[in-house]
Each structure stands twice: as structure tokens, then as C-alpha cells.
Image (cartoon, rainbow, N blue to C red; front, side, top):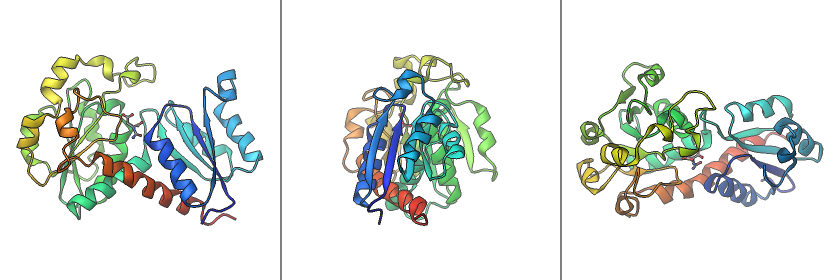
Length: 279
Ligand code: NCD
């Protein structure tokens, strides 16, 4: 479908799953892929990401996939170039294709999400995955409980409860477990703990031992989840912190690798939809 077209991956922040799955998705559709990271590009010499994108567009790039540390980075590029831009994660803001692959994985496991409750646990304040998953789940009629310590899950997140009763904040994981239809664990974002991006919170606000005791998913907590409730995590995982190894590797309950597999399909769909109507 995309034979003869060029997709440029602009990854100004580290990535394993998202970058490789966008590359595989583009190649499976027949496109050629250019891979750029800050380290090997003129961004390290001070060129702006918009100038970088304009130069690649001048070479005939047909679409951009952008990851960057600044919220709004992909949007900034989209305003300057004439070709489609897909946000592959912008700072703490959003990660739309992750939200889509999360709901695809949840639907494969649970069927219709309407009236189902998904617990999203951990470093919500720094998580672009949490925001995109929340919008995707509630768009499909599901409910979301954002769970974690007050430093990482401020009450202000209840502002996303636009259709009343669909989004709650809780600081008590053990009380929520029996009520969940699925649980999504998030990585503690130690690299965003400096607070430079605004919004505070992040890994710096936690003490690992305490965090694991109150919010880590271990076998005992897994046993208190309903049997039908799967475990998700966007990766990369801090094994033994937010998620114990035996839970992560449990083939019956963990959907972490199926999430990764679904990422390729979802990104193929996104590229096809974004690029289909353009010659
Ligand atoms: C996430 C990201 O980079 O936002 N990973 C991913 O894309 N699968 C989550 C994270 O880094 O914790």
C-alpha cells in the first residue's frame, strides 16, 4: 500500500518498542524508512526539530513519526510541514498509538469495554501513556481508576471525568483490586523526575521500597484481582518495582507481549489511514 513512499522516524527520545514497531509497520506496507535520533543528527549541533523536519520534507519524505521530550513537539512539526505527522510520544503529554494498541489488547481479552473498569497504576503525573489510554478507554464507554500515591496521582486528574463517574482517582490499590476488569501498570519515570518539564512529580517523588510495598503488583495482589482481569504494561518494565517478575512472565494473565505485537498492527493502520489519501 505504501510502496515507493518514505517514512521518517524522528526519535529525539529513547525508544525500543515504539520505534521498531513503526519501522516494521512501515516496511510491511512497502514503505522505505529513514531513522533519525538526536545523537546521530544535526539536532545535536543545535538545529531545531522543525528545521530538521523541513529538510527531510525537501528530500521527499512523505510522513513523519515523531517522539520528543517536549509536550507539543509533534504538533509543532505538524504545523510546519505539509505531510502527515504521527505523535509517537511527546513528553508527559500523549502517546496516541499506545492508547490505541492498549484498547485493542483490552478488547481482545474482555470484548466490549463499555461499563468495564480499568485500573491504571503508578506514575500517572509523568505518563503520556496514561493520558492516551484514558481517552481511548473512556471513548469506548469504559471506566478508569487512576491509582498511585498522591505525589504521582494528584486529585486534579479527576478533571478528565468529563462524563461523570467514568474517571476516578484512588490512592489505595488494595481496595481497588477486586473491582477491576483489567490492570495497567506503568513504569516509574525516573528520567522525568527533575521537574524541568513542569508539573512536578515523577520518579524523584518516590522511595522504591515504599512504592513496591504499596503499589507494586506481586503474586498476592494478582490473586485478589478477578480471574478474568489481565495485566498490561506499556514497557519498559522496572522488574521488581512496579511489577514482579512472576506476574510479568505469567502466560495466563500478562498481556505485555501481545500489546507489543498489537503495536505493529495498530501502527500499520495509523500509517495507512494517514498516508492513504496522499499521492
Ligand atoms: C512508554 C513511553 O515511552 O511513553 N513506552 C512505550 O512507548 N511503550 C512508557 C514508558 O517509557 O514508560
